[in-house]
Image 1 (tube, rainbow, N blue to C red):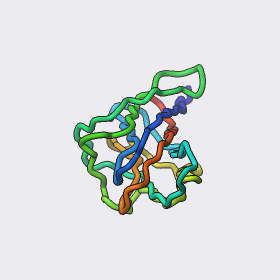
Image 2: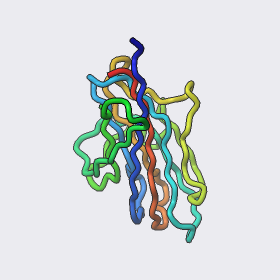
Image 3: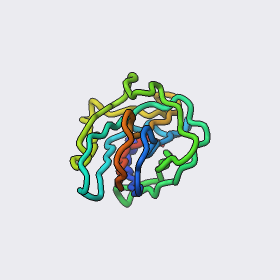
Length: 168
């Protein structure tokens, strides 16, 4: 019997982002989970009042700690299959996680500086997906964050995180 591959998404809205660096979302794959891959990470602004240059990073968290965040609602992309084994949280408001590299330049990270009206969209080919963890790699936490150096002019955004789980 083939190993099932399931795809999930979680979407969340954050109002009035005014500080950087800030974790917008993070995903945790438990050790017992299937192997998981980030397939897409997207941040879009909800208004076009101010266009500003923003920097985003999708990178490994070395110490998660106990951040204050909101659990995302997870959507399974087909009606067949189990609930996601990974957990997604959004809008960290206290106790920011520690990242492999504070600037987002660490191995395995994806960093982009984009105009806010365009938004951030990490949508890799299958050869470029980020392996989160599970049976092939240790349990992992990856975070999507807005980076410093400048605090952004207040903006509202929507975040989409899509990932796949193999097996489990």
